[in-house]
Image (cartoon, rainbow, N blue to C red; front, side, top):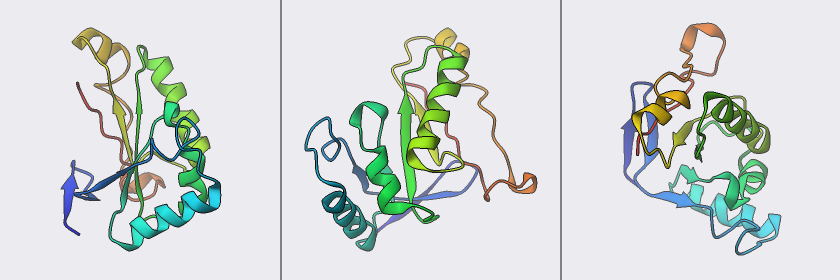
Length: 144
């Protein structure tokens, strides 16, 4: 598997990202054991990057398969229109994924710079090594 480094925090992601839309209850409704087996198989094959979003309904599957695994990078996203909505979406994601911090969190469906700024897309907090956070709190802001 090939890997690339994303952002200044040095997040190493596999060039192939495993999308979980098809796994969640929105679509396939895999049982948790089948989902965990499939996710772990992907990780064993070198895929360390997994994509989710609230509508996919797959965060719990990722949490069950990868609880406490620092090798796994989860990309989540939000269509937030305000800073408060983004803050709520990140907090909800962390609870559902059973994680203390976001690896990569995308702001999507942004239609103007003003909305991006209002959603915090230009100023989400980022913590470094020295404040007790796991090395490199990784929040990446994406502009559509």
